[in-house]
Length: 290
Image 1 (cartoon, rainbow, N blue to C red):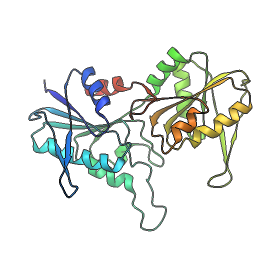
Image 2: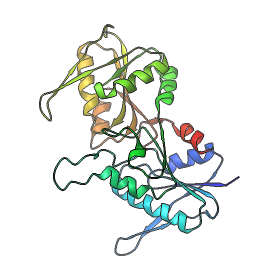
Image 3: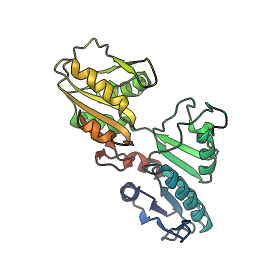
Image 4: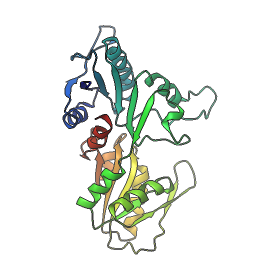
């Protein structure tokens, strides 16, 4: 049986340690330093010859730096004779730009996919996809896409069993409904009416009275927080008793986390390390890597 070594990359050391423990593999942090001119020097401090090298890189909070380090780490593992190199990207960045909107723009999702396909396998969770439905459309290497649905449903059953699940907009409808169904909880999806690029009105239509209810707003990614903040304001006007916001990926750009915490309780999974990453999803990754 091929031995596995798990390496924790930039910002992903905690996740990598938990993953290594789950699959009973050895762990080592990726070592980095810089030459005087600013160039990156990377070292894998554990022997990978003939082994399965698992490189863990979540693409936040510095996606450009993470991308460069991940690419060099993949190359380093291959140079040192790894039999198999797997990139575990709990949060996979650069997937938003999937179309050229203005002349000269890079369609960065396919460019980054081509670069990362130097790994033998990619494992990620709930990538933020728009016009493409599968990573296989842009990656030439083997990809495994996991979902946090069951983990979130289990978390809701244990900690929020008296609450209603709310999808903040139409894009979240199928996803929020799936989590709610797995958790055995009622759900509704809010509608978004956009007037301008910055002016949005949230429409709440529910057959279930919301006054006095405890609700959980569930979404795949919390970045600026706007998708959560507007629904929170509307739900409070309707007399909702308490609100919890749960996201798979807690990006929290700028002051998003502070702004949200003024209005509601906030929780995320640990795909990205942050102060509210309380929901562990390493079990799902471990089941794929065993």
